[in-house]
Image (cartoon, rainbow, N blue to C red; front, side, top):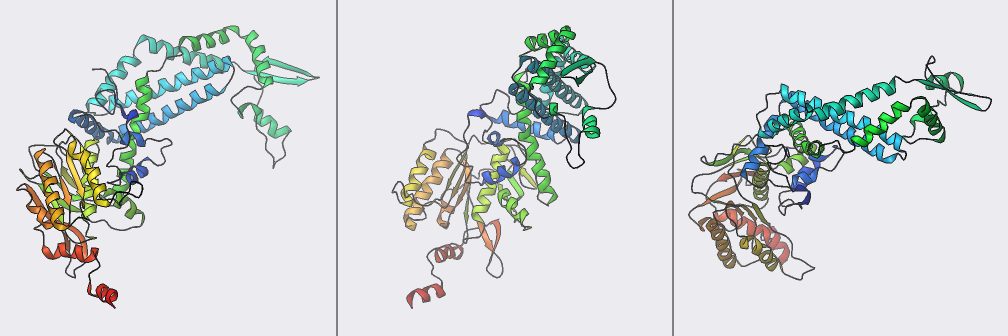
Amino acid sequence: MAFESILDLHNSSYKDEIRPSFYVDFNLDQIIDRICRNWGENISSFYYYLPADKESEDYRRAVMADIKIESLNVALMNFVKGMKQHGEIIKTKEFVKREIQKAAWHISEVLQYGKALQELLAALQEADIRSQGMIELRTDLEQYLTSEEFKTMYQQAGELVQERNSFHFTISYNDNQVVVSEGDIPGTYDTFLKDNLTEPEKPMKSPFVENPDLVSLEMLIIEILQKKKPELFKKTTGFYEKYKDYAKEVYIQLGKELPYYLAFYKYEEKMQKLGFAFTAPSVDAKQDMFATGLYDLALACVNSEDNKEVTSNDFVYHEGETFIVLTGPNQGGKTTFARSLGQMMYFTKMGLDVPAMAANVHYFNHILTHFTVEESVETGRGKLQEELVRLKPMMNVESHNDFVVINELFTTAANYDAIIMGQRVLQHFIGQKCRGIYVTHLKELTEAHESVVSMRAMLDEQGKQNHKIVRKEAEDIACAINQVNKYRLKYEQLKERLS
């Protein structure tokens, strides 16, 4: 099978992808922004594209495992840098105006391309790679770099550079005459300027290296040299014409795709040094889906900058369990837990490590979310209507086996209506063989279906939020606290309002 992409089994469509709707709900924009910083180009679009199927997710996951091989990781970083240098040479070639100079830059471009690929192949042959993606890349490179076409091209480029570099000449100016002669003189042009024409505080540099384009004097010199060395110039322009389209697009794209893994892994290493756990999730559908030490990576990104701790939690879906209904007091960490669960699903689907100590995650077709938002001033709709409008397409999707994250739905409806609508929403998604989490202040939703699991945000002994989420039956008093806080019904608040 021919190598096509390190991101997917098949030619990916990530260039056409828009940011997923759940991106903001899970605060993924904050995470990816930090991951992509200092990489010199916008690689965030690679994180928009979700693999097409389970096989593609497994493909990425195996590649990610190989990325962690230290020697290979260094080589891949060098390859990315080498391909960036290759790109800079291309930009320079496009900048210059004269064909002979374009031809000279083209030779350097070919050599940089070949050097980067050869060093990458050497590293792939040395490393104990296991992934289909890396093995197919190695095989493809071996065939390509040992082909007669590549070997001839690379050899000719090297010989042309060697011949060009062996040709030395000097420029002399005397009595209004410029004389170009072959041979060396002691020192360099910069040394001559320093010794003869420069004040100590005003160092001068050669004008020939300040700009890649040619000035009139340089062009005149080239015309003289072209008469002296016609064969060298002929071979240079001939090489340019013959190998204009030398590069394989798949390798150019490889240099752009690899930062998807490398940037994530570098950020993962940084966070691990700060004490935050990451793990490669197992994906065994025959075992319970679970995570231990799961935390919100977006919150960890922010807290790590302020040296603050982040609470982690555990969860498990046993066989036959479909939805977690999470209740508890406001500010108790319910939304944070829901986000951490969603982030885990996302990173698993992307073939990356997840922010947890250990995890086993099942395969889901899609990730669906509905987070509470303020009512829309532009549409004139109330909050409840706004929620229903956003909920409708989610429930009309003709798919099953999705992971669904719902956060505080129907909060403006009367409790009785919210319970009925919430039960129907849960029953719909359970009927579609979905799994998920429903964050709510309505404890009655824990009884919406026999497959629903009740979890609760806990309070410490002093009655304060400690952001721990445990498997426990919903409590009237805990849910009542939500209502008291929401409607400002504490004794002091009532006394203030009635006085």
